[in-house]
Image (cartoon, rainbow, N blue to C red; front, side, top):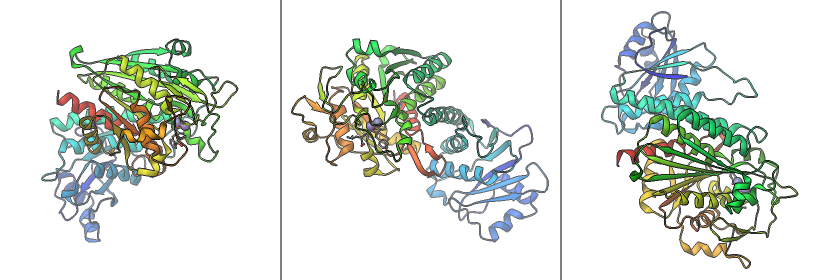
Length: 491
Ligand code: BES
Ligand code: MN
Ligand code: ZN
């Protein structure tokens, strides 16, 4: 699929038109469609189409530029936001599924006095074509075909630039979801590292890979111990993108890369374990963000750190009760081998710190408790810098990936006291599971301004998401790209 600004030079089979509730459709395309359908559009409005959010209708045109017109309700003008347009585009695609449509024109709505800009509308509508038309088709034919070309009508200069952003974010979002969809048999630490190397060559950022021997030598035992139960050895991938001078400083991104999480010796219950192939969503997001940053030529410096393991039970696996000396020297008693994410992230954060970032953001499918606390609608956000957290929250709201801040008071350290080591990696009570994981990570970040995104509740959709469907949601990618754009702007 490709996004273009302007009129389609060929013959577009369909046109998408957004309609506001309580307003007469006066746009060019709607007038043209009304004419071509011999008043069909007016008729549908008479019959009760109100332009409410989620409302959509398909018109067949007997002649003229298009064969199909899709009317998409976006609700009242004052309530417009990006999410409305993303959902509308997805329902438009649903409307034309089953028909042979390879080219679509979309007429942007003049957002007028609403809080939304034309630029934001173009971006939301454009990226939604990518989000909604992605299918994992390595092992099965996709259920339908999607348009190959999308032409956006009514974009000004700013909206055109926004469409380029939409194209890049859309593609990288699909890239990340593709990696998440790959089962454990297709993607393991070395394979992921290969994928990172390929990305670096293609888009122009540096990729360094540390193998299990190097990791042992460096004392990265959090990663080594979690990885040792699998026949597929652990890796640590370091990505560096340089888009500005050294004095701009570097933003560190750390992503959890558990290519499959069985729980290890603290084996998970069988039901639903298949979705644990998504336990490398953070890693896929960090790689996708690096690719997007390089493609967008963002004027900043990034360091990506991705610890990669497969968490398996096995003869060499670590045991509950084992004590690990972590990369930074902290000793940790392993209460549960299923609390593996924080162990590899602790070393990942330590590694990132050694690269001297001005701030660090980690992203991880870290705790089942996050879904209990916030459900599928919010990312759990924690950290040690109010300013960083508030900026990230804003980027979340703008991008359609909202966060909710949880506290990381030192009081919670009580729950991680061990009799045998300086810390333990979890507690068996049900108390504050997401915060406890966050407070564990906080121990390893030192003084660097840091934010932690727990996407365990949002990375995988069991129920169909309005425009992402079921399965991987690529949660965090849109938010992080937005955040980096904001940083670039306020520099
Ligand atoms: N990868 C899981 C977290 C998870 C659970 C993600 C469900 C998505 C859906 C993580 O490694 C884990 O197992 N966490 C444990 C921690 C506990 C043992 C302290 C959990 O949440 O149960
Ligand atoms: Mn686990
Ligand atoms: Zn995990």
